[in-house]
Amino acid sequence: MEPIKVLTANIDKPNSTAIDTYLQSGGYERARKALTTMTPDAIIQLVKDSELRGRGGAGFPTGSKWGFVPKNAPRPTYLLCNADESEPGTFKDRVIIEKDPHLLIESMIITGFAIGSNPMSYIYIRGEFHYGATVLEKALAEARAKGFLGKGVFGTSFDFDITVARGAGAYICGEETGLIESIEGHRGQPRVKPPFPAIIGAFGGPTVVQNVETLACVPLIVENGAEWFKSFGSPKNTGPKLYCISGAINKPGVYEFPLGVNLKELIYEHCGGIPGGRKLKAVIPGGASAPMLLPHEIDLPLNFDAVMKAGSMLGSAAIIVIDDSMCIVDAVWRLAKFFAHESCGQCTPCREGTNWIETVLDRIERGGGVPEDIPLLMDMPENITGRSLCALGDAACGPVLSSIHKFTDEFRYHIEHKSCLPETKRYRRLDFASGH
Amino acid sequence: MAELHPDNPYAKDRFADPSKAVEFPPEARKRFEHILTRYPSKEAALLPTLHLAQETWGWISPETVHYVSELLDLSPANVFGVVSFYNMYNQKPVGKYHLQVCTNLSCMINRAYDIYEGLCEKLHVKPGGTTPDGLYTVTEVECLGSCGTAPVVQINNDYHENMSVEEMDALLPKLK
Ligand SMILES: Cc1cc2nc3c(=O)[nH]c(=O)nc-3n(C[C@H](O)[C@H](O)[C@H](O)COP(=O)(O)O)c2cc1C
Ligand code: SF4
Ligand code: FES
Image (tube, rainbow over all chains, first blue to last red; front, side, top):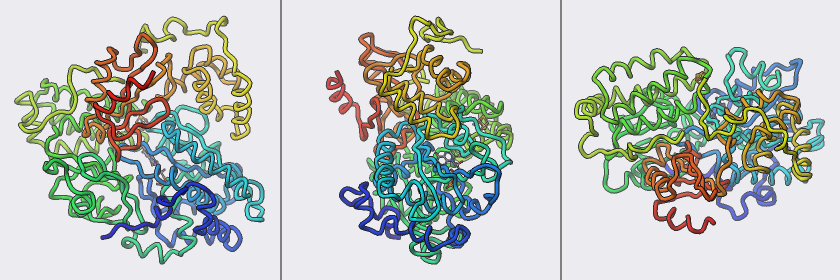
C-alpha cells in the first residue's frame, strides 16, 4: 500500500496556514456548498453514508452520533472539537492544527450547521500546545475577517464562531465528558453516562465532541461524496487515516494511508524497521491504552475491526515500537505510572488500582518482586475493568494485562533473578525518585 | 488528607495574605473582559483566567486564588480545587526556565531519562526542584504529543524536539 496525501494534501505547501493558500485549493467552498445547497439532515445522511468513524479512540460512527442530537432541546447545542491529543504515542491532530488550521475551521462550520450548533463552539486544545493555539487564533481571526465566521455565515441565517479553549495538563480531559467538565470551568472529572453528551452535555445542552482528524474528513466528504470516501479502506473501516509511529523505529512520524495499512509493512517498509540492528519485541498499535502485540501478530491491517479481532485496539492509531533491548517490566511500569498519575481519582477501583499496578511493577523492577505478584497483577484488571466510570480504568489494564500474558517468562525471570532478562535493560536509574 | 509539603506555600499560608493582594494590570484586565464574552457562564472562564494569571505572575499564589475567585464569583475552595487538579498551574514559583522533560514511553525509549537525570544532577536539584538562583526548574512530564521527534523537552512554552544529552548540554548555557 502506498502513502496518500488526502488529509495532509496542504501541509507541505509554503505558507500552508495562511487563508489565501487555503482558498487557492478550494478552501471554504465546501462549507459554502454545505450551508447554501444542503440541509442539515442531508449532511448528516452523507456522513452516515460515508461510514466515517471517530478518529479519537473509540471509532464510533460519526453520522450516527450527529443523528442522536435532539432537534428541539430546551438548551443550545454545542460542538466541541477534541484537540486534547494526550494519549501517549499520539501526535497527529497537531499536524492539522499547526499546518492546516483552516481545514479544521471549515470542518467545524459544516458540522456546526449540521447539528444546529449554538453560535459559539470550542476547540479544546491541550494546554501544552501553545504554538498550535497561536496558529488557530490567527487562522480564526483571518476567517472572521473574511466573514466565514460570525453573523449570517455565507449569507445564510446561520451564526457561528469558534473559541480556542486551552486545557491545563490533564489527560482525562480528552475523555469527552471530562472535556465538557473542563470547558465548564471544573476539574476534568468524567460524568456518568447516560445521559450521553449528545442529549445532555456542555452547559446542559446536547453536545457533540469530535476529534480533530474526524472533523477534518468532513469537508472532503462534502466535496467528493460518500462513495469517494469509501473508496479508501474497507467496508465499515473507510477513509484516509493518519498513523503516528514512534519509539524504537528508524523513521518515526505521521504517515497517511487508506485506513487499514498493514502493520508489518508500515514498520519495515515505510518506516525503515528497528534501529541499530535490534529486533522487534512488541508493538502497541493504538496508544498507551491498547494491549501489546507480539512480532508474530503484526501481519494485520490497521483498521478498527482487524485490530480489535487481534485482541487490541486501533485507538488513536498511535503505534509505539518496543525493541528487544528494553526490559518489558520497565516499559509497562512507565505506562502504569502514566495512568496512576492521570487517574482523576473519582472511582476507587481506578484510583487505587492504577497506583497498585505501578507500585507492584516498580517493586518487580527493583528486584523486590515475589512470585505471587504475577497472579496479583493478572487479577487486578478484573477488579478495575467495568467497575469504574470512564474508559481510563480499563485502558490502564490494557498494556499491563497483555504484557503479563505475553511475557510471563520475562516477568518470572525478573522476580526470580531480581534483575532484567539478559540482553535487556532498563532505560532509567533506580536511585532517582519519581518526579511527580 | 495528605500533608502538604513544607515547601508548598499553601502549607504556611492556607489563607491569602491581604498585604500581598494582587490585581490584573490594565492589559491583562482587558483580556480578562474579553474572555468573559466567549463563555456562556462566568465559571466557564476559570481555566483561561487562571492561564492569564499564571502568564501575569508566573504561578498561582493563594492571593491569586482569592482574586480569581472574587472575579468569577466562585469560592476560593472551588478555584483551589481546579488549580490543584491541573498540572500546568504552578502552585509554587518556578524558575525563569521551566525545563519539562517528557519521559513517557516513546521518549524513554529514546533515552529521555538520561536527559532528565542529567539535568537534575548537573543543576543539583531534586525532581521538580528549582535552582537557588531561580533560573531553572526541572520537571518530569507526561507525553507532550510530540513522540515522533522524541525525546522532547518543553522549555517554558516552547518544544525542543529530537533532543539528546549533548544538545541539552549545549543549550543550557544559552538559557540565562
Ligand atoms: C481517558 C481517555 C482519554 C481520551 N483522550 C482523547 C484525546 O486526547 N483526544 C481525542 O480526540 N479523544 C480522546 N478520547 C476519546 C473521547 O472520549 C471521544 O471518544 C472522542 O473525542 C470522540 O470523538 P471521535 O468520535 O471523533 O473520535 C479519550 C478517551 C478516554 C477514555
Ligand atoms: S475510571 Fe479513573 S479516570 Fe475515569 S472517572 Fe473513574 S477514577 Fe476518573
Ligand atoms: S512520549 Fe514524549 S512526547 Fe510522547
